[in-house]
Image 1 (cartoon, rainbow, N blue to C red):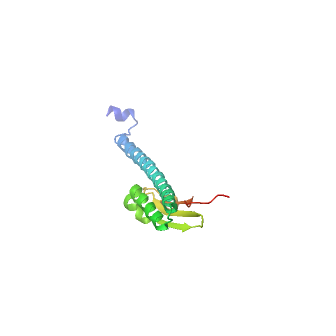
Image 2 (image 1 turned 30 degrees about the horizontal axis):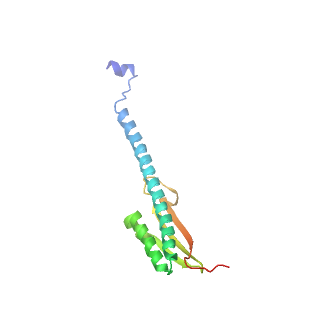
Image 3 (image 1 turned 90 degrees about the vertical axis):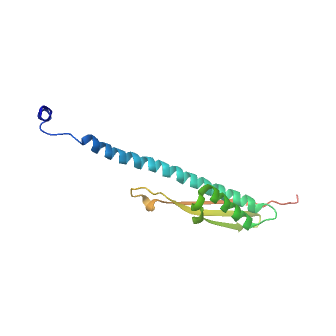
Amino acid sequence: MVRAALLGGRSERGQTLAEFALGAVAFFVAVLGALHFALAVHARHVVETAAVEGARWAAVEPVSLQRGEERARSVLASGLGRWSNDYSVQARDGGDTVTLTVQGHYIVALPVPLPHGGRVDLVSSATVRKEGFRPGP
């Protein structure tokens, strides 16, 4: 009773719990955001590695675009697991070079509104010169 009189008749009971609840929500959203950022960066690195590895394998003599695409899909599956099925791989023969393109997207799933619905498009292309004997001048 004396405490309530000192506080002007207001009770601050439960205020700490309410502040903790609001702070905890903000903290967990920030932690989840950092985690999804790290996963998106990892997916980007896997896509880039798949494109480079696939192009390199496709350019080895005898040239085989199918072998390059299979290698890129293998790298995607190793790095992204079941989410690799959502990515497309396309190899193109450019005469003296082979170009392999990997594209897909990563979805950031946070309980806050994000631009583009949280979709991060990932595209990487790699061009490698075909291996083989080239006579000098």
